[in-house]
Image (cartoon, rainbow, N blue to C red; front, side, top):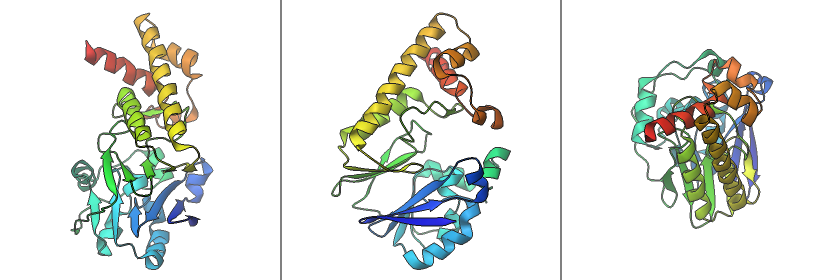
Length: 265
């Protein structure tokens, strides 16, 4: 299912299936200046194909290779839609790695991206690297309209879960500060939609995460184990940590802080 919402010059495409809704997840793509930003997940392919017939985008941007953002890139290429894909994202998509069962349940398994495509220049939209979420992650900045499409940068202020290994807490703080410094008057999040008071929201998450990192670092220095830190600082593990077998878990915030401290020595 795709449900469109209009915000003046921006169209939000809210994408979900009964499976994603059953665990409280959806994702959004956006259309601005005739450009599609991200293309959703494999299990909404047919709905997206119908939407493309009506939208007829001049090109598309892929912010990063996760299957909920780039899961239909092959469809776009087959439709002849020019694409802006960062080189690291393209490598991931071409590799076509199989995702874990909980991700297949929620989003579906993306096919390897084998199609040729025409490159796309999204100007005046600008792509800004924001690798705290994952190494290939980018956000989209419309300076003229003071609008930021933040992909998975924000997601909410008190987000305690992280991906294993690839998510960098310190880099994420830096990315949030850099995004706030742009002074966006509008912020569109891939999972939360339109965010009120963008600069304050970005700064609030950066502040909370920075403070949380500091507390975790102190506990690590005091010799606490990860499980105890998760309980004391983050309120214990949540269901996603168990279902994902630790791939997407609160414990990863602690582990990634610990790994960063070790690497800094």
